[in-house]
Length: 268
Image (tube, rainbow, N blue to C red; front, side):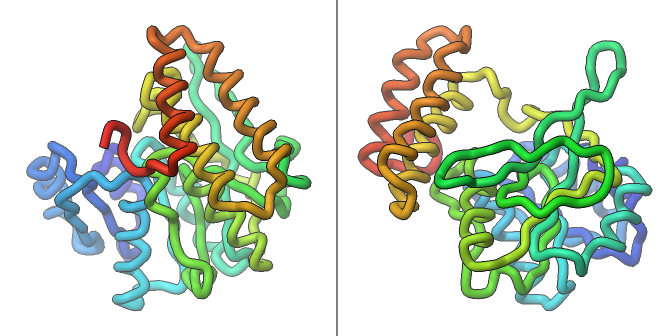
């Protein structure tokens, strides 16, 4: 995340919380943040993964009663003043609101990709890609998520055991199961440099995708064994198309760890 650019487009009346997940840029980050009065920095002594970092921010907002809403952002999004203004007018609409996202292609074109889905009888069905309005869904992707803070009550926050991938899927599943409203917003798309945190076609990405699909199935026993097996098989099939050296060994390790319930960071 280019902190300087992000804060430059964020109005000073909006509180901003940054979680440093034990990065190597803490001195640079501290120097940049010293220029801004509306920013709180939470420093973690460990890299606990996506859910761990997000939970630190959520807990900080809740315990300090900072706001009734919280916008969670990945470090690889690119904000605009238009997007920030749009979010401010969207806070009271749903318990969870995701946003249409796009990447920038080699020629500068915007490439929009699916950011929401339905969970139909245990199977993922992608939501249609509209160009305007909002749509009630079951799942939204986690690069930018707007939550009502009260939505976490009685449900809990992100499951930190996943470490990377599947956390927002799991949380949205629990939200919709509990009757919370989840929706996707198409009005002001967000630029997301997808894969900046972890390259999608990498050994770690393959490992977490496969292992966490199994961990999700172990956690949510209400989904039929057959459907869970089909979902896991689809992920494994997709990962097998990767050109990563040693992919069979990586997938085998992920399957083993998922089956025995081993979670957290890879290799620990």
